[in-house]
Every structure is written in structure tokens, then in C-alpha cells.
Length: 173
Ligand SMILES: CC(C)(COP(=O)(O)OP(=O)(O)OC[C@H]1O[C@@H](n2cnc3c(N)ncnc32)[C@H](O)[C@@H]1OP(=O)(O)O)[C@@H](O)C(=O)NCCC(=O)NCCS
Image (tube, rainbow, N blue to C red; front, side, top):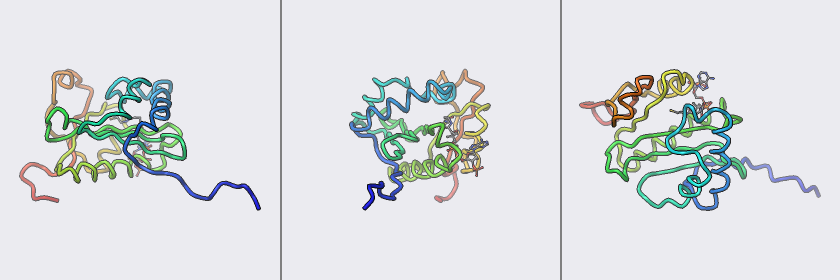
């Protein structure tokens, strides 16, 4: 009899829970040390915030893609706490897991999570020079949509403001 590991692929998307605090801290730290934070900074990428997010109990949604004991993807849908109707989406994939289709499947998961909340649209902003992300969003059907939500976006002319989902006046999908 061998002591080989069971041949399961422990890959899943799940809500953040306190047990993921350390793994999310590792993930945020990795984003900082690999230059990803220049493109992805929805909030400080600190261990303290990772812990807070893993204990968060509000209306916004925070998810991780876990592979075995590591976090390989992080995604959020937020805005409900501030009473916005259309949530903002954010996503980041661990450098070693990019190019595997993980972002595409995670995006579909996040869209389903928003739809289950009754949302007809999600929005995001992305640096124009973040060509991989722009290609991903365009391939999923994102379109240049609603105007900047706040003054911070308004001055960031290097961003695209993308919307996904039902266009105004269109029939439900
Ligand atoms: C952008 C990002 C999420 C893509 O993740 P990924 O796991 O590599 O993406 P996938 O493998 O699922 O590929 C999905 C699509 O993304 C685009 N894409 C991914 N890598 C690409 C590359 N190197 N060149 C061009 N397009 C690319 C393509 O449209 C691709 O579809 P295709 O494989 O059918 O061509 C990832 O690079 C990342 O986490 N970047 C840092 C964080 C970030 O920029 N987040 C977005 C902030 S708005």
C-alpha cells in the first residue's frame, strides 16, 4: 500500500472565511511583490486587510479561488454596502495560475453571484494598458458603459470604465 495523495484536484471558488486569513495575506503579499498591485488596488493589499475581509459580514461579496491550501484567485463584488445598484467587480489571479482559463471561469462565477443577487449589470474600471485584462473583459462582452462613479475615477483618464450585462432599454438576457 502506498501513501500517495488522493488523486483529487482541490480547486474551488468559495466565499472568504476566517480560516483563509493567512492564505489571503500570502496572496496579497505576492501581488505586491510581483508588480500586480500597480494594476490591481481595490483596497490596500495588506495582511491586516486580508484578515478583516475574511471576517467581513456585510452585503458585499468577497471570494477566493483555492487550490489545495493556497489562494490562486481573488474576486470581489462590492457597492451594496454603499447602496449602489450596480456592483463593482475586481479580480486577480496568482501569477503562477495565469493563462489557465481561471480568470475566465472565475468571471463567470462572479457574474452568476451578481445575477443571483438580482443584478442586471456589473461594472469595473481597468487601466487601458492592462491589455490582458482588457482583452478578457472584451471577450466576455463588456462594453464601455456608465460614466465614472466618483471624482477619483474621473481624473484617471488612463482607465476604461466597462459595464457587463443588460444594456439600457434592452430586453432581459
Ligand atoms: C488579467 C488576469 C485576471 C487574467 O488572468 P488569466 O488567468 O491569465 O486569464 P485566463 O487564462 O482566464 O484568460 C482569459 C482571457 O484573458 C486574456 N488574456 C489572458 N492572458 C493574456 C495574455 N497574456 N495576452 C493577451 N490576453 C490575455 C485573453 O482574452 C484570455 O482569453 P483566451 O485565452 O481565450 O485568449 C490576470 O492576468 C491578472 O490577475 N492580472 C493582474 C490583476 C489584474 O490586472 N486584474 C484586473 C484589474 S482590472
